[in-house]
Amino acid sequence: MRLIENEKQIKIRTRMGEIAPLVGLGLLLAGMAILFLKPEWFWIALIGVWVGFIASMLGSYFGGRYLGPLAHHKRVPEALKGLENSFTLIVYKTPAAFLLVDAGGLTVILVRSQGGRITYANGKWKQHEKMGGLKRFAGQEGVGRPEQMAQVEVDDLQRYLRKRLSEGVEIPVRAVILFVHPDVVLEVENPPMPVFRTPELKRWLRKEGRRPNLPKETLAQLYAALEIEAED
Image 1: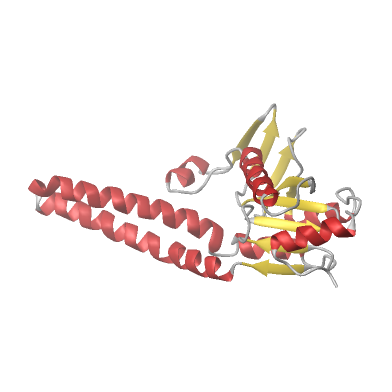
Image 2: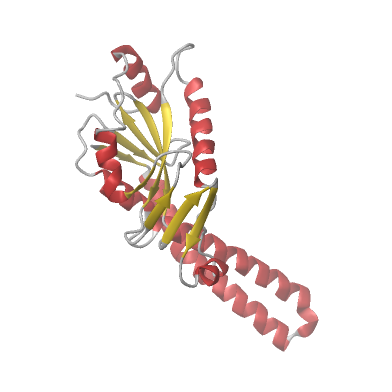
């Protein structure tokens, strides 16, 4: 598998994930100190506390995606390692954060890093994890509605392609949801789109998820639109 990454974005946002929590903590502590020492500066202290809170939330957001063993830009390539060179993974360079290109079209990979037991039934996602509520209060992202987030990326990607492809050229675009936490347990009933743990996605792409190849002329246009080299 070929890998194309936006290294600049990864570097910048990794750094933001490292710095933002420290800035947030500093502002929160400074705001509390001002409230205690200078009560008449209440509004200054309040602004500091709110900015510190926002910085902490940003740190949690970027940290969850770019730092540690669950960093998305590390876990997704690991999950797909070993795929043939007919597959190209594009990371943070298109409207879809993780876009897999193959001879049959495009696959948007929506990444979730929650652990514990994740269930989907009757149109609702639930995360069953010890102290899950406390973790989310501390800034950990919940499972949310990943199918909706994936569909947004699909729609944005299709608009992106329409501007770059000849009129009438259609590229199949699908989405999958990938949970990258090694200890996640998935219990899903009739999900709106395919849902996988990291060990499962590669096998699916080679078997059930395999699609007929697009015409060579269409593939050439797609590679040009995505600014990647055609397969050798």
